[in-house]
Image (cartoon, rainbow, N blue to C red; front, side, top):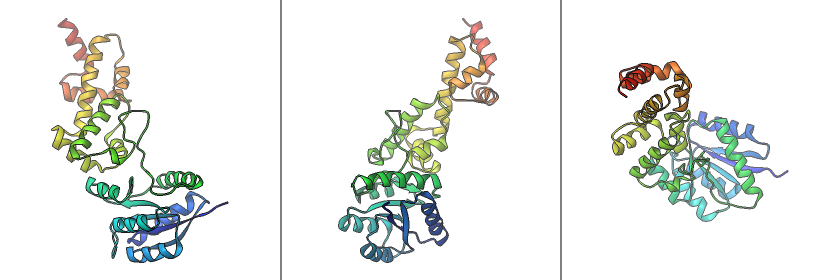
Length: 264
């Protein structure tokens, strides 16, 4: 069985050893040939070890992660590079794209993320392909979801895509944490750019869509159980839905329905 060499580049010792451990647990097809803390040391090892895969943090000393990726890409295009970073700003993502990186993993990196990445890499190496792969959970059945960070333009475009995603998925159990994960940005950053361009937060927009749809259903489906209405707009907990509805509308779902029926 072929075993592929992995180089880990991360300046924080605890995080580096944690990633080494996760890679070691993920698959017998991969082994960590070295782990280092600086870009210069990593570049020297790349030239001597010729690893198959390099996990590299952006913020490392001597040669930063993006410059290291550029050097690897130019001289060893067959090496697969995966960016690991605590930064979720679009500027870093855009710079990574310019160096040939499709996506990067955000810290803290979870075991299932490493598992998924290495499984994709194994398939890629098995077919003889090379270069950098996309490693984040973009895609899915919804045709408006992202397939790659390359699809994202400026922050206005990001906000638009997030708004479209919420509009298309508000009836499911989607939440802001999940949306931030799908779009590979922190919740704080995502909320900031969304509010800048949409004059509301993603959470408030999500709630408004759900409550507006619930109001329509309460009137047009007068026999529909409140719990079913809640579920239909993305809330599994009827009591939570009723409290939220009253906070937004000023009336409980039942009272709102009765009031609307009186005005027919």
